[in-house]
Length: 176
Image (cartoon, rainbow, N blue to C red; front, side):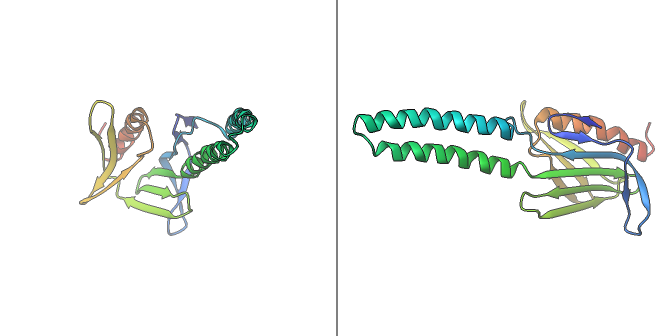
C-alpha cells in the first residue's frame, strides 16, 4: 500500500464481480480529501482559543463591557462550527478500481450516499485538463459520458494519479 496526501493505493487486491467470481485488480486507489489538522490538534486549538477568548472576556467584564462576552462566545462557537463542517466534508471519498474487464469509480458522500460508474477499460480515456498553471481537472471519458473526479485532490496529486493509472490502462489496451 502506498499513500500520498490524498491517495491510498492498494496493490494485489481483488474485487467481486456481479456473478460472484473474483477478479484481480490491476489498480485500486482510494482518494480522500486531506485535512491538515487532526482531531487531537483541533481539540488543542479549540482549548487555546477558548482560554484566550475567556481571558479577553474576563477583561471586558472587569471594565463593564459584559455584552462583548456574548460576541466572544459566538466567536468560539463559530470556530468550532467551521471545523466540524470541514471534518464532515472530509468524510467524502472516491475509489478507483481497474480490473481486466472494468474500470469502476465509486463516490461516497459524507451523508452515506454512494454513486457508482462502470467503464469498459478499453474505451475509457483518462483526461487531465490543465485549466491554468496552478489548476487542473481530472475526468474519465467513454462513449460520450464524462465523469469528473478527484476535485478535492491537489493538482500534484491528480497528476500523480494519472501517472500511476495511465500505464495500467495502456497495458490493457495492448500498448507497451
